[in-house]
Image 1: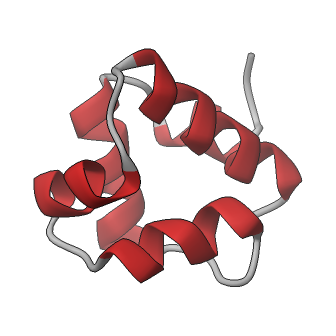
Image 2 (image 1 turned 30 degrees about the vertical axis):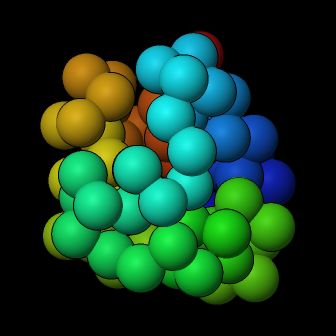
Length: 68
């Protein structure tokens, strides 16, 4: 992943007017995990990346910065 993932995750979350806690609950992770992803401290597992993509109805390639 790269900084683009961090930005896109935060942007998508804010577009849905969700806090980090609400998003964490929706995809089944802790709030601190969402924070770490948005700060670029760690990367999601493949299963979490897929869960994020499904929740926001975007591709994993979009999240990873491989497409616009």
